[in-house]
Amino acid sequence: MTVARDLLLVALDPESGKVRLPSMAAEPALGGAALIDLVLLGRLELVGTGRKARVAVADRTPVDDPDLQAAFERVWQKGHQAPKAIVTRLGKKQRKAVLASLEADGLVRDEQRRVLGIRLERYELVDVARRDQLVGAMRQVLLHDQPADQVTGPLVGLLLAADQLGLVVEKRERKAAKTRAKVVADGDWASEGVRKAIQDAQAAMTAAMTASIAASTTASSS
Image (cartoon, rainbow, N blue to C red; front, side, top):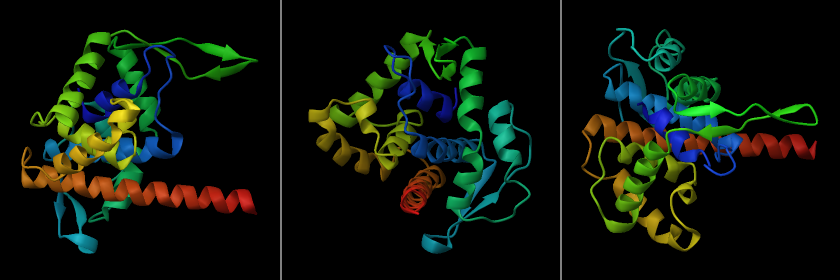
């Protein structure tokens, strides 16, 4: 499983079949997930700090996962790029691709719902145990101070950046969860490279979503 697949499993509502990840957050979040996956696999690396931080290709060896390979191919000929640009490129077309992969692996099933002839994106959660395991582990990290790992750590960081911690905690728990998530994102559970990738992915996601909101506001007022 990749970070992107785990992210969409967590975001899938078992009752409604809807992926509860707002459209303006979906691409940046999946782009951030792909960045983290490719850093974990040693294909990308972060160089520099702050505004000078750049993502560079560390290894051009093809990735076994077809979704990640397709995302990787969109960035490996561009040279050093700012994290925001990388997250944007990696996130393109990832939602449909990752959902198709989850379906191909038998983890979800496309329900093919239509209302007034319009197709609704709804999926039946087949592997309930996997989602419950992920949500349970993240709740332990966020609410009971359990140590994060390379599965829960990236997910916590991505949901924090997307302001979607409510996918795994109740409303009354969100304040405590957000405080803990910030600690997890800066924690020592991961190597320096992975931790840096998560932090840069978070910043890039925030910038991308802010730009999306600004563009939407401008369009609606014109």
